[in-house]
Length: 359
Image 1 (cartoon, one colour):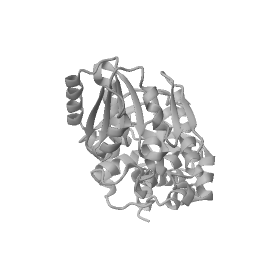
Image 2 (cartoon, one colour):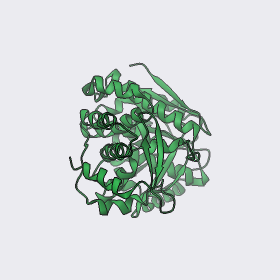
Image 3 (cartoon, one colour):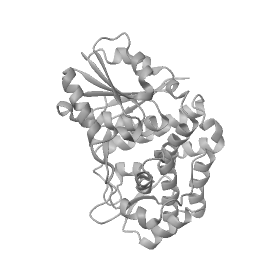
Image 4 (cartoon, one colour):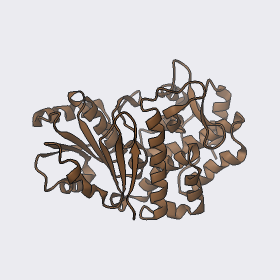
């Protein structure tokens, strides 16, 4: 499989390297730094121990798995650990893991000594397509997801597709939600490739999968390069907030279900709901809204949801990061590949679209 490279030209340009075995480049990549602090979840202990086995000055820090790592308590423990080994600005922090590991490790790097260098080796489809690229870092509070965080770019991202080979099918499918989202907001070729052969799109060893992943990373790189700090959304300009398509409802579902729903599964439902809202506002045709369902269902993602009453989810959505004051701002599509922001959509429209999720 051919190695692919996407450059993110934001405040500190860096490369995202995609291909089988690319983590082998890590030894040369980290050679300028004196020591390395590696943060990883417990299931990846063996991979973490082997990653830099021949390199001196490596300190391993095991994190809780998944969203359990993204708490202020884990942050404080990590900071104390770095203090105990004496990590300095001449050293580098390395993230090995999925999206939650990437989120919290990036925030550790952003805040330790007011910022030290950071490299990411994502190990899930979701992390490769989304969390590891773009420089968003964060942790959760009981009141909401990613409410505390920072914009902080890595020095490099290594997307080693070999690390996906033993990934459970549910994890692969969950990550495809972010890839399909990129197709809907910006790159119709992604949606074409998925429609043509959904089964092959789910095979992490296939060229089709490598193509849609690389295209999704390119979409994110293009958006982030133009609006790294999510600062340009005004008037007809939407900027980085386009990447939040489907996420307003998704984050509420994740929190309401205590993160028993995977992020991509919640995003899938959020995309279907956002399309239903847009259809009711006359922004999407019925066929365009149905395309959302068809794409997501074709790869095995959920397209319905009825576990939580709307009146329980709606207050959580008001704490979404895109909210301004009491206004709920939604990323919607005004036609495919044309994201827009709509504020103060009629509450009856929102509720009606949610009722449609019951199937």
